[in-house]
Length: 428
Image (tube, rainbow, N blue to C red; front, side, top):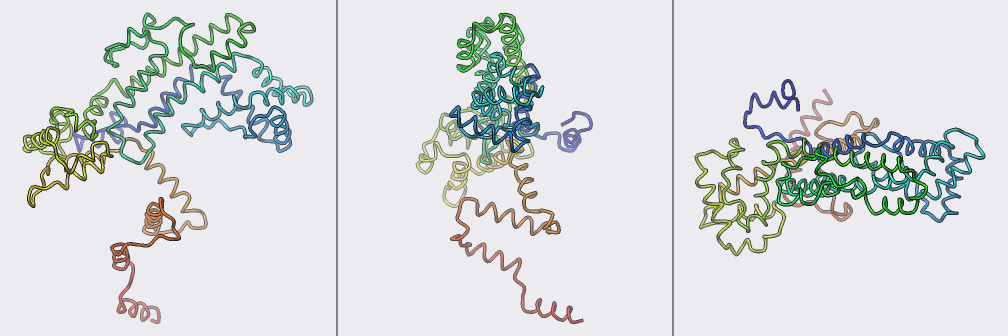
């Protein structure tokens, strides 16, 4: 993505009108990762130490299971904080909070019996209500980020929802620490997320119900200085997360482009939004020529204003089905919306993230193992297609269509002459 020597820069030299968009899932993960640096390192270190101490020893794991049974918590395993999996931290945090009573009792016993410094240090953190408040805060704030991440890991078309989803998530995060009057009727890109005068007072910033309940339970044991430090660091987390989202999504041309792509949504079509497709069309000169702008806009206005019976039941359908139905509309033998349907169907090829492509990398790794390392590319491609084809059906009852059988026979079945020639070549 570099502006000088990156692949993007080289492609822009060849295709000046190239539409450039980074992977939304990677960008969101980077936003959360940068925000987490505002919290004490000890929080992640505690999670790692708990995992290493218990899960690396079958004896300790068995002992911990007894404490789980005694405290009547679910017999779940402690999870490992991963540096590469985007959504792992949320699950790690939730699991530790779930197992907190069992962990506290277990490390109390371990500190007394084993006499190891690690057990004593972990126990000290478990007894510290501020540590538990940090975990509770993370269990509250991370789902807001991960929901957005999960939504755009889907393989179905989502690019028309990017603008709305990112705006909604960004505004939700701002509402935790920005004064309400600063958010009302304002362009999100014009809100200064780093201006202290826009912040709610430290004590009133929303950090989740669980964080608040832990504070009320242990308020007498929490030092004023520790509480203030916690409030400042969680505020810095919110500010950094907001600043990163602003930088990566809202403060460039991409965000306005994503807003234009909302025209793909059938709901917007029947609401007449936007009035004109030209601002979107000029972004993609390689798809639609300026000589057909008038026809394109006329077809758009006819679709948004006119009542077409065949499309009435498609108002809330997926964009793929809706625009396919539009492409099938006819006046006599001629397409009714040739320029519009072609333009929209082309736009739907734009990816909203690279998650779908990376999922294929994982499938290739599972298929092309050490024992099958000599698989040809055609064979591997066929296996991937077969797996995708059988994804939603029972492989025991599946029957190929006549078209598929014909295609297979054309490509793979050899004629008697070819077989005879192969036999002669082998004998020779």
